[in-house]
Image (cartoon, helix red, strand yellow):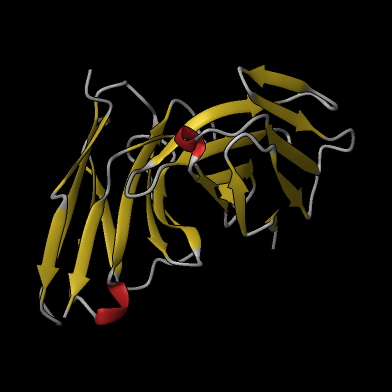
Length: 111
Length: 112
């Protein structure tokens, strides 16, 4: 079945360093979504990318959707302690088109 | 505007006991979902309801049942709890299937 894979599984950075997480799908996606889950919290929707090659920015976060619509990345510039959490990508799939989530990248930031 | 409300927030059950996790959304969303989250396993879909009146199995439905009571409410029932069902359960909703989920704050369930 369809799979959505994320790397790395964990990332430890010093505050101020950049961070990137990558997402790869086994099939072409109609869109890719990104979520953030703070420790002890629930996933929160960040953004949806739809177009091939699309790039969107939210302050220090930059999201990209690959040309083939099978991969995506999230880049955080100059990380802050508030960026700590797990970042999930997700794409429509499954037998009925519901979202398939990657296993997430857990980011820790050392002050 | 509360979004997605889940109750209870914490629960401890003995093996074999039953319980129902409640979920309600006030955003007039069509689709609702139940996920479980275990360390290293990510978010796994248990059941979902694409629209009022329909329910479908997800990736890990065994041991669970659901009811879409109305457009707002989607409950998850454990008929005979097992230690393997110890997990954090999240309810979510979206305007349409697979479109920008809003998650509830979760239920931490321990089965002993």
